[in-house]
Length: 396
Image (cartoon, rainbow, N blue to C red; front, side, top):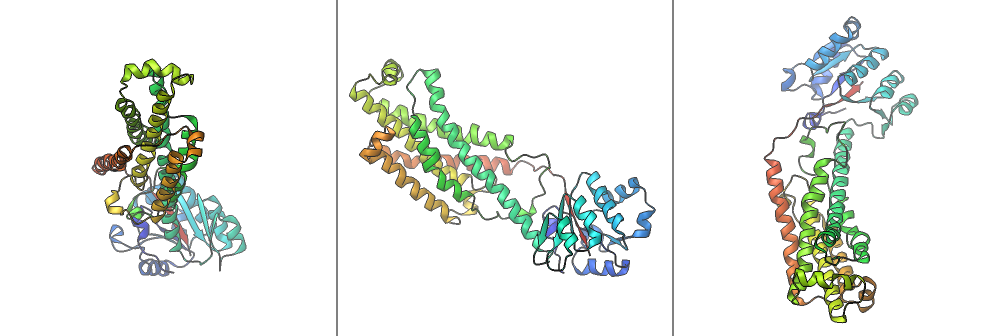
């Protein structure tokens, strides 16, 4: 078995617990890389006999003080269980690996029990939450990396989706407070949520683990998937920018046709009742189409911004996830069909945009992307919070 210090990079501590003699356990600990500079170059070996004479308070003090290079030798099954419970009482998230029948109580008591699939006993596999089919302890490192990547990708997906929700809500907020007609109609909102947003959002779920993901400490046990920083970024930053850009496109179309705010307010009721003139309704349809197109264009910049909460897109690269470009291509085939197909124009209440209006859409993606790059720069300069450690325990 080979073990590197990846656990140190992941903010995870490793404790060896074995039934072997102390000298054997210490030699193995040195060979597998469990000993590092933080453990002063040698393991702290505690035998089962000495462990039996320690009170719970003394044991907790040792576990807290010696967080690196700690080895327990000649340990009984009930003592393994006691060590797991002691770590949990200190507030740690405990993962236990084992293969024998005597490991089953500790595997069951741990937050995550990991059994060996090839050489492990049936009792150990039944007591565990995860089974390593290759019996390779280093596989746990890969599993942690993939687990962190999945967690981050879900957050990216949620941020991207919630951002467009805020952009869709702002036109109706403007309708209430500015007394103007809504800048989007219901079917156009559905076109964004169920059409244009789907493939780019799914592409975010296929993101590879970010560089440095294993240097981050474990997140707090109390941290939720949908937390306040994510909500603020999605609703009050990215979504707000998209909504303001969409409303700007809406008002620009009216302004280009000679309508200011007061004139637009005057025809608002007739537009809502479908009693306005054909010319006014044509302008309204073009204005809502502009809003729709601007939001979709902003989402193109947003999908690249959402690829990381802290890392710049210029470090990640624009071509490292080609599924995003496929999603964007399908997205624009759909949106252009909605805008220019006569049949879909009737369904979605859209109108053809002028070439100059389409060119203005090119501003939207970099607008969102640059704004989020500035936010990321500020976030990177903010000191990180040190979270609680997780302790995987290995039995041999």
